Length: 83
Image (tube, rainbow, N blue to C red; front, top):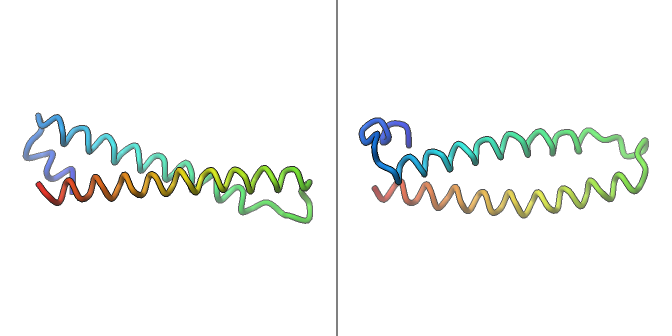
């Protein structure tokens, strides 16, 4: 969506910023997906309770960041659709 608009207006600073923001959100999603998958692979019976506690706290922190990223992505999409 952004790429096709950006191709039409390659010098538009706002579009470049939106495109960069979307790329950052994609990278963020990829990194967090990997982190969540590694936590999900923990075998609870073989892990110390402290590790499980830390993993739970990390997942809680990730949830907040993921929700914020989703809001940002929705705002970017709305801005693009209004163009």
